[in-house]
Length: 139
Image (tube, rainbow, N blue to C red; front, side, top):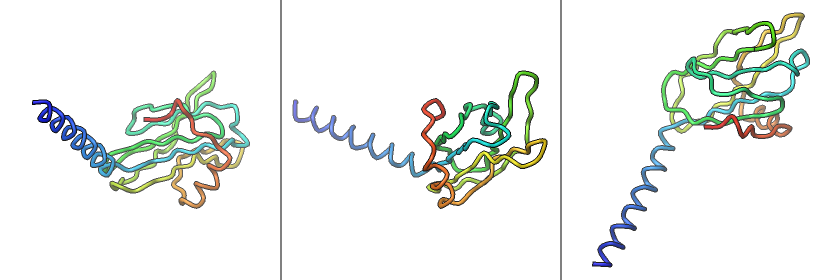
């Protein structure tokens, strides 16, 4: 009887492990990277996925999210004491097993134009070298 219990227990562990790795292969990783911008070092920026607020990304931080395959809308909103500014969202068709890098990009000029811009892995790694993971911005 003990042998049957042990075999059942190890079988359950094995299937659970296989299900978790299968779930990971159904998702894609999306990195959000925020370097300190000249015009916006003190501003607060909220990151949204599919119109749902996921976090406030701090200066020189990055976060990683696992998302299912499909079309997703990524957005950023700037908030200060007086108002909230919404910018044009970025839409990406996410493919399972791939990795995407989005940089919080600050435009130049009197009025900053902020967006989440897709960047290459090479550029993302260079940007993240001087950043830390934001522990409050993970899923």
